Image (tube, rainbow, N blue to C red; front, side, top):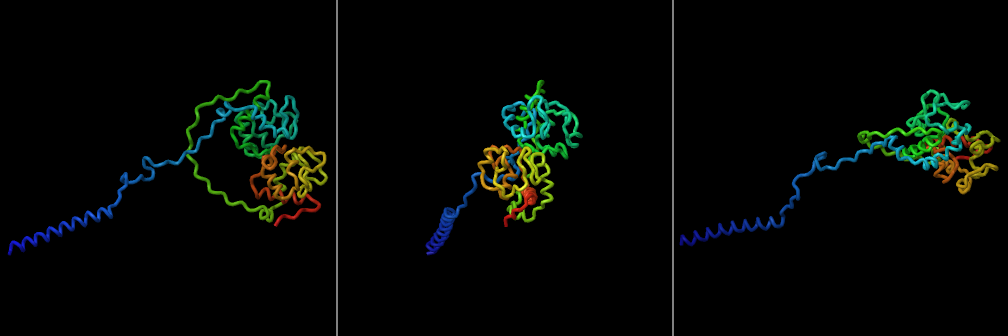
Length: 314
């Protein structure tokens, strides 16, 4: 009797243990966690983490000149023919003649009226000085009379310098390339530009006096006076509302003739912003004004050059 009772107790304990083990196996099968293939994670800056790409260093001028294309430079310099002569023995126009400019002393063409800003630079027109001048004349010589805003593309500038090298009886050799400088640290990302205001809003607060000041550089090629005649470009009195390419006797480009319509404020704004984009193949050598507020001031000034000023759009 006692043996039977002990066996029952032993079987009950064994059954409880087996039940507990079976429950554990079942729960692990249902709820077993999935571990990562590779334990841990990569910390920022740790080996294996992706690094930001460094900015490419600027190519030195001698390297650019070594692969420059004088034929392309001649094509890029065609716009300059409106103000400069490239022929040997050529006379001054709006700007000084450019034959033999490489290696020539600055501001040295006899009889030409140079700005005080350029006279004070001194030295000769070496390739590095010409490159800086073509990049942005107003930064190279403060107060310069040169209205050309500059060429930001370094290879285009090198091509133009290669063309200028050919305009000489004794071409000046290019400087010899040296080892490239070490890469500079990547600059901080620029802040996103603020959205541009619509033209009517800019015109509503435009300042014609400022516009007149900005437009002074255009007087080398345009007349602003009533009854004024064409110079390098057509006269601008009464231009707002006038049909495009309509001054009798003036030789307009086919590109501008094809635009059609009148010089409304939006067309003038697009023209001043980038003439070559507005009319592909234009003869206009002015590269454009990127500041929308300055363009609005210029338009406000042009509005005053009329017997019947055209109202601004609302």
